[in-house]
Image (cartoon, rainbow, N blue to C red; front, side, top):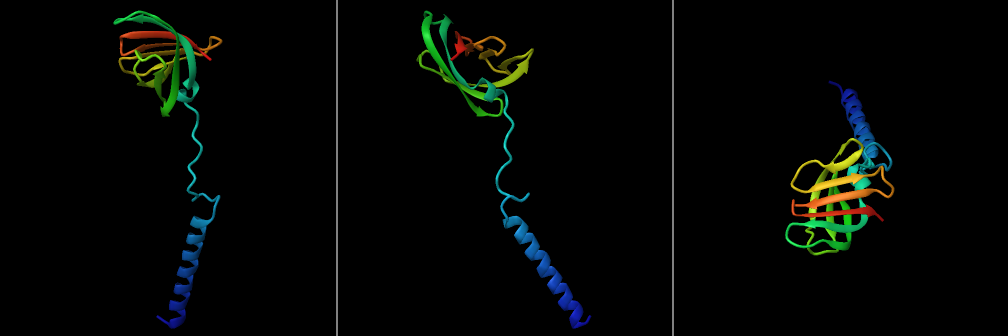
Length: 136
């Protein structure tokens, strides 16, 4: 092999390396570090503040004027908390059935009817306490 052949290979390799490094470091290219925007899911649709009442409690009485906060914590996953200490903080995986958002599995019931105005939410916490209310 001649020296001109070796020089051509070296310069071709360097040109390819510079092109690769440039493509990776340029903002807005396909190699950008920014993740693509995620599509809204059921947890996004359910997220919000709801006002209602504890309508049934296996270990106590009903309670009026209870606010639930539903927060998205993952893909189709919400965390529910309340301003009433009897209601535990729970996480519920969600699914869609017959136009309603409900729990996908577990021992807590979550039923959100968005067809009603305002949206109606019914939650049973761990099979012990039931709450019913509307989106604020």
